[in-house]
Length: 79
Image 1 (tube, rainbow, N blue to C red):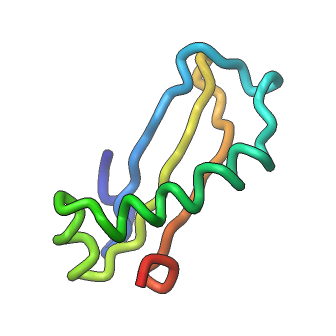
Image 2: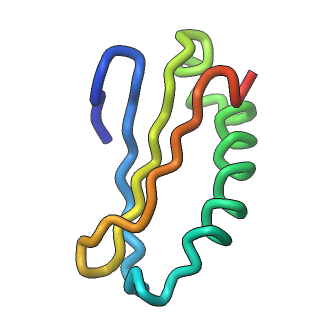
């Protein structure tokens, strides 16, 4: 994880058992986005991020290090 610009925090995940060609990116985004928003809204460890209106970017790569997708969650999304 790192800060990529002011008030934007990025998390990096590797899908260790999957290749990009085997992933339905549209379906993954559809499933992940509401779950990420719910987690941001309810996770006590993310209170600081919520209170400071931080945008969070979740970056997913496949087992070969190839970027699969980025999901950006803004304060507007989780308010």
